[in-house]
Every structure is written in C-alpha cells, then in structure tokens.
Length: 137
Image 1 (tube, rainbow, N blue to C red):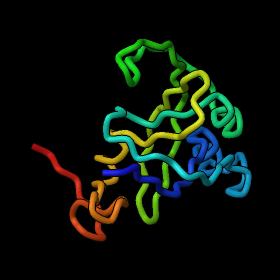
Image 2: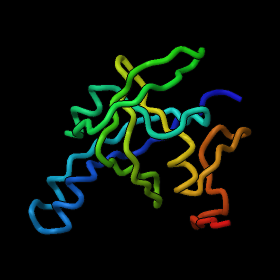
Image 3: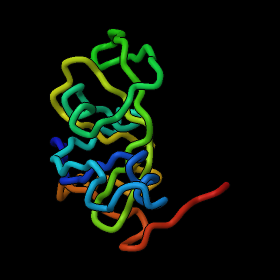
Image 4: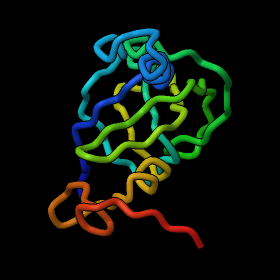
C-alpha cells in the first residue's frame, strides 16, 4: 500500500469555545486547510511547530515518543485542535514534533471519525458508510 494523503481542516479548539460563547466571531477562529498524511502507525494528530504557530495553539505538556525507526524524541502536547474531514470532526491534543514537515493523522482521530483506509483506492472512507457510527463494547 502506498501513502494516503487527505485534505483536512484544522481549527483552534479554544477559539471554537470563544466563538460559541460570543467572545469572538466564527470568522475569527484560527484554522488552516492542509494535505495530511494518513498514518495508521501514529497514535494521534502530529504536526510541526510552524503549523502549531499558525493555529495559535499553546503547548500545555510534553511527552517522550517513539518515532519511526525506534528512536525517541521529545514533543510538545497542544491544547485541543479540531480536525475536520468532509462531514466528520474529531477534537484531539496534537503532538508537536520538532522539524516535522508533514501533518499526520493517527488512529485516535481516525477511530473517532469512524474512518478507515481503503488500500485499493488509497483514500479514507467511512468504516460504516457515509454516516459515522460509534462503538461501545
């Protein structure tokens, strides 16, 4: 299977709350639309420092992570960011890796949005069709 890239929109979660409470307008929510690499080996949303800065996300914690090849790296953990893909959304805390050029979508937001990778057509699709479903076991 080759690499799967998808267009997504990222929105600052704090700005969304401010807009909902009437403190800023919807147009003032910081957001960017990007092409992201779907990475089923990644845990969550991963971005570089430049993307974090564009969205105005604060780093609220740090974490040591294992990256491809088995080496360890220090990364920042942001306040919530909303991921929008077509009619689906997920809100996660992004991992900020120094020098990361790609935006990676990992398994936690994919699961929350009920998405899987279609390896034949190399794209994201709904695991249960066009309507997202949750699963509680």
